[in-house]
Length: 153
Image (tube, rainbow, N blue to C red; front, side, top):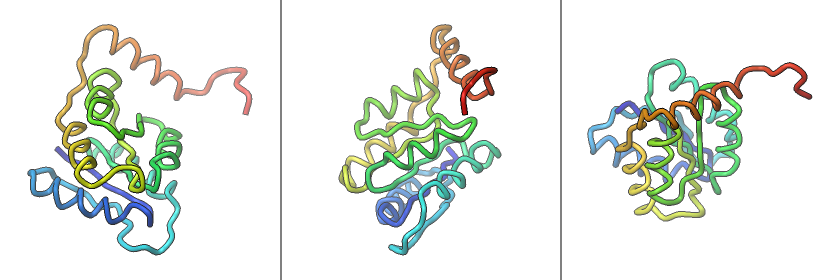
């Protein structure tokens, strides 16, 4: 699978660990940065990951920040991205199977390295189940990305 990985300064060590692990497992991995403790803004990494996915260079993405929260908020603002904080393996695979999730957000200060590896493997090993109810719900989620008349801004 083609996977894009990105992290802010709080998550780059975990991102690097995952990059090595996923490459060793045979995935085609794109490193979107960052690679140092120098402060960077997680929305910039969310954009890099989203562009790789929506541009067809990656199938899924993994975004790491300190808690996973900021990264998830930023990623979900981008059309075509369905991201969730996943700090357990069930959510990692179920989010793909039922919701066609294409980005997971991890908190480097929340979970350990071993669990992050297990979560990433569960995420990348899952496939969307195209049952009618899941497809119907996914279409409703996609519709939310379109401008709505009367929406307040």
